[in-house]
Image (cartoon, rainbow, N blue to C red):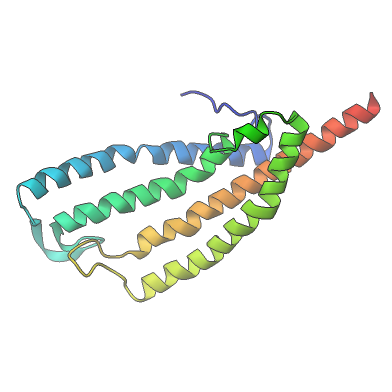
Length: 197
């Protein structure tokens, strides 16, 4: 597997280990694309065959209730896609594979780039992530308490999907915090080096 293109996760220590773990989680979550594609294909074929209910069983099971339907497959596609997105966005940030405004960034020095990144992490990323984690947790608990599920033979136990919102943004918060620590360390080290020379 290729190493991330950014130098942002080079180093050692606890922060480095956490950032590598976040990248690993994102790469593992990316494999959810395979079952998503299979579900899309199955949904198209079954829809063309006008199959509504695929299987029935006697007792309710987690997520599916008492039957597997075309609506269940459709919901499962979106559940898996949402899970993949939530688990991979932090790794994308750490690997420096996220979208940037390159026409502004390309003319900056490395130090200026680090300062802009630091500002963005502290002012925007960390507060937003903390807010979403806080409210996402409440959102998930309410879904679990009311046993939220589908009204149209789709998936049940929606709290499971919703739990990935605070989990994903917690990973994003940890990624932003780790990158902030690394950037501050790099800036102070380069400032100390330049003043010594």
